Image 1 (cartoon, helix red, strand yellow):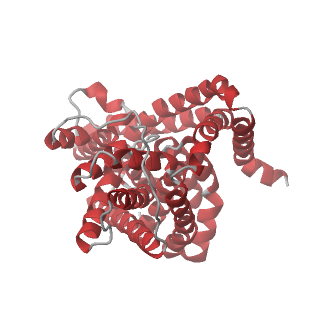
Image 2: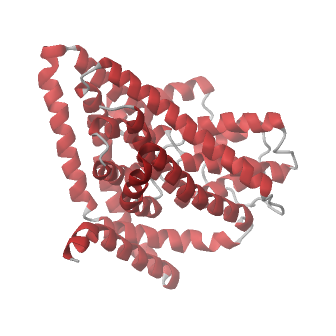
Image 3: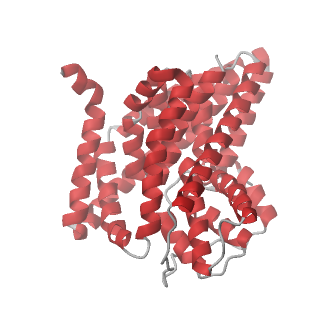
Length: 399
């Protein structure tokens, strides 16, 4: 019994924090504003710790790979795995909305105060992959640029041979230090996540019973089915029944973290810890999970389909036209890459979807509100999907 309490003490305390936060959000919503700063402090500490971890983890993984062929194979298998998972989630959601159509959806007259900027497509592409100043790399809003820089740094460290050995030791040491720092920050998780969860329940709860009940219900039912059934299938494909048991044993902590924070980014430390317990080599986990946080999003894939479907209902167009479906799949893959691993980071992707389909302005509020309300489950699918993706990659690449 003591061993069980020792192994699951972190999860138990986290659950207690979430339960207490939920109760406060329901029975005393006016009190939430006083405890929300505790959640904000925790998330800020987590974000500033995770950014350098991403750099050290990715660059160290690439620099420490012994064989060039292994690096290329990991990247190829990882890319195919991400694409396969994202498209599977999108096609599953299309089947769900086809079998269980939604009607009577209307938009909101109140626009969410979040709008796309007027940058050109060329400028957007440049800003996705690069930044103009070195210091801008270490912002969670520039994760894709940081990943590109970490890739190049790790590759350069490999190419320098003996002359680069001191630097390789530095990034390996930096990775260990940042892991330890995150363990210290995560000790505050029960308080911080409990406070943040209280805020979510108090602010988003009432909206769940408005205009959006039907599409939200469809998303949450389909999402939970996908989470349980498909993740189990992926884990089984990765390592048989042992893989399924190992995955679900260690997926609890990342799942609770994702629900509480609505951030794949904030869930990364829990994912890395879960991957280590599952037995995934660090050379794979430290590539797949940080990169997956930015580029691999099952939940965003499913919510993209739901949002496009609802937008088409509002304007009275046929979503199931083959041309619209193919374009929806293409947009979904792109949105899953663009949407940042931060709370409500899908707004840019939503605006891209609106602009590609040339949808009228009245579709924007409904799309954004749905994106906000599905964020908790979408984050779970996005974040925890990175763990099962790492298992999948490990199945085909032995290091």
